[in-house]
Each structure stands twice: as structure tokens, then as C-alpha cells.
Image (cartoon, rainbow, N blue to C red; front, side, top):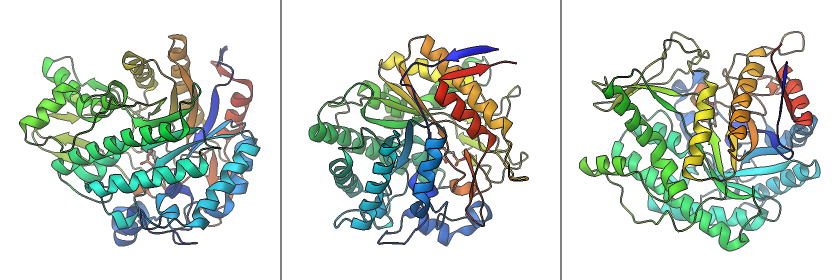
Length: 466
Ligand code: BG6
């Protein structure tokens, strides 16, 4: 048995997003988001027709949820603010009841010594705004950001502008699997640019209002970065992997960390006549910290005869996920890989590579803002035994520890997720939580992994091996 010691002050917590847990979708003045509308209109596109209408009812059960976090030894909690709850029309008159909900939540968290790490935008765009293609959405987002910074900035010391702009751009505007269900590469590239513009301006705005933060605090962004390995050593696959990395990772990484777009991908978009419109100087102000969301890596092949995509939303292993862009790259399965039921590869090394890579751009505080595994957990005799989750989190924390030893400034880890929640198009079958949530009664039951994590959070020691 080996003991891996994490640094004092390392943040131990879990993560959620407003629409995935809150429910109360149209209570006390909340406006609809594009997800509320999509789920109502297209139940056939969500596993078992799930909706975020009730979710985990966190809007009413928040006090119990904070008690659980405290019980699990959390020192941090990553969450998001529902934009349509505080600005039902996306801009204009704020909804005081919605604002007051987050006042109560932040006060309760702080009273338990749990530092909130708050994401402004976690995909629940107010339906009134329709799409990020529209430049007016960027202006409305800044109004929302300013409202939150001024109202909560005295208590919230860690902010993230956006959650996973790459994933939401891809699924919302290229594959069309997520709302607003567009399938248009030009729209996708423009939306990515609008996200990055909104991000840069929000960073500036935060610093204007609250000044320069202490180390480890301030404003950042949560990027999903899936390490891309070439499927084989062939030069074609190596360059396909580089390109896939450019489109999905570097296009977001480099404006955020290096203040510019990657030249190879910019040149590609220009050649195709798809360069985004609108000037922005990404270098004018930059993040205080970076959040990385990591679940799985990709393996890219150059053999991509057609554009093709499919997401496994059933949790049946035979339903393969696919993603290919004609003539550029296709993602393939790793023949030696371990996979979850939703065909997400389990590869902790990818997290280690990613953390080292961040430092190549900039040596700044990093938080693992999401990492976890979706399982088909079952409540039996009042207990949920989830050894696969314990193994997954342990292996990934070992990767974090190795990165720390290499000098990467990792400040904390937020497990996805505090509780089983609305897993987007996967509905409710895919369970990620420390807390099992009964779909009938909404009763919370801590899983074995929660007890394991509590010991870890309290001791700061990860025990590895037999
Ligand atoms: C991230 C998101 O992409 O992964 C979370 O930030 C999400 O909101 C998590 O739930 C797991 O993805 P999924 O689709 O399996 O729920």
C-alpha cells in the first residue's frame, strides 16, 4: 500500500450544473431555457424522454444537499447559476426570487466552509435568446455576468465564464444533437468565436469590478480537453490527430492561454471560407486559473470518407459512438482500451498528459473542474456499491498526483457529480453521483464512493494498492 499525499489546502469537492439538478423549471419567475423547450418538444431524442423539469429538486432540497457536501468533507463545490432563473428573458429585468435562491445557497455553503466555484454559463441559454450565433447573445451574457459579479462577488471568489464551449459548440451547432440543433459548420465556427469573445470580455469585466484576485482565486473557464492520440503511427494518422486536436482543443486552449487562435486551424478555416467574423483581442486580459474537465481521450484516424456522428445515449455497449469530419479525421475505438457502458474510454494517462500540456502554455493554477464516470448504479438493500467509481476516481487522482510532482500547479479536484442528475440526452439512466437519487421519491442515498471520498478529503491522503 502506498500513501499519496496531496498538498495542504487542496480543494476537495464535486460539481453540478443548474439545469441538471435544480428542477423547478418554471417556478418563482424562472424563464425557459433552450433545453427545457427541446426536451418538451423532442422527448424521442432524449433517453426515456427525460426532462429537466424536476431534475433532483435541488431548488427545494438545497439545504439537505449542502449538509451532504459537508458530511463528505467537501471544501469546494462547483456549480452554475441558471441564467433564465435570474434573467428570465435573457436580459432586462432580473428575477429577485431567483437571485435570492443563490444568496441562500452561497451563504449556506460558506457557513460550512465550502468555497463555491461558480460557472456562469453551463448550457442553459434562455430560450428568448435562441442561439449563440446572434451577437446580441454575447451582449446579454455580459449583462448576466455583471449582474452575478456585483450581486455575489463578495462571497464567490472563484468564477468560470463558460463550461466546455467546445462540446456545446460541437453538439449544438455541428452534430445538432443538443439544442439549438443546428448542423452547420459555419455556424459552429462563428459560435465558438462568439463564446470566446464573451469569455474574454467577461474576464475583463470581472477584473474591472473586483480587481486582481489572490492566487488560486478569480476568474477562469472550464474547458473539456480530450487528449487526441493517433490511431496508428502512420504519418496520415499523426496529422489527423494533430488536426482533430487543433479543431477541438487548441481552438479553445490557445485563445484562452496564449491570446491567439492556432495558425494551422485558422488557415484551414480561411481556406474553406469559414473564418469567423468579429474582431477580438484575446490577449487583452486573461484567466486567473484554468478548469479542465476530463473524461476520455480520442484516437484519430485519417480514414474519414464521410461526415458521421452518433452518441451512445442508451448505455448499451453495442451502441457505438461515432464522430468523423469528411476528409479530416475519424475517431476510432482503442482496441486495447477499457470502456464504460456508454463507450467512454477510461484512460487516466490522458488527464496527466493534459495537465502537463497546460503548463506548456502557461504556469497557472489549475482545477480539475470535472472528472467522473457514468454507471448504472443500483440501490440494493439501502446501499449502492460502486467500486468502479472508486477505481476511476482513484486512478485519475493518481494522475493528478503525478502531475503535481512534475510541478503542475493543480489546486483542486471536483468529482462529477455530487448527485445523479439529468445527463442531457442520456436522460437519467447514466448515473454519476456520490448521492444516489431515487427517481420516484428523489430521496438521496450516499454511495460507497462518497464514504471513500470523505476519508480522502479529510486526510488528503490517497491510499493506492492492496
Ligand atoms: C460534461 C458536462 O460534458 O460532462 C456535464 O460539463 C456532463 O454537464 C458531463 O453532465 C457528463 O456528460 P454526460 O453527457 O454523460 O452527462
